[in-house]
Length: 132
View 1 (cartoon, rainbow, N blue to C red):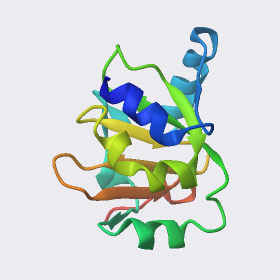
View 2: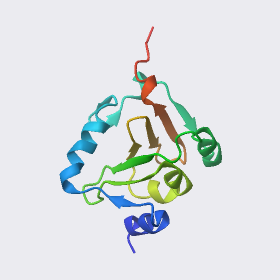
View 3: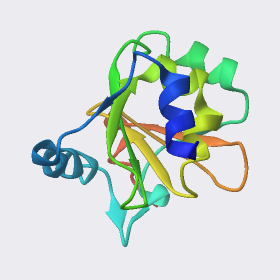
View 4: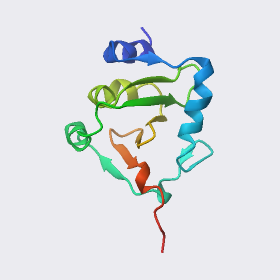
């Protein structure tokens, strides 16, 4: 069984592959965030790092039932969607897909920081961080 199949099984019924027709819209949504050469420009965003997934889940209580997209930096792994809560509860299966994985929607962006088990999180409302 592939790592993708393991991830799909871990997410169970809360998993849907995005059709090829809709994938371009998903990439457009990802590009709402500051990105350059397939890297998030974290210096331009207020963020918080989480090592404890229970703490992360607790901090996401108000949005944990929202759907998020998962985009892996591997063309062989399809873009898919799931509930944020399911992704966090199965984060290690999601992280195993690829060294670079983006988890996001219109509200939030998460990026596992490979090779650690840390997840970096930013809310879209924090995109306009000023630098002095």
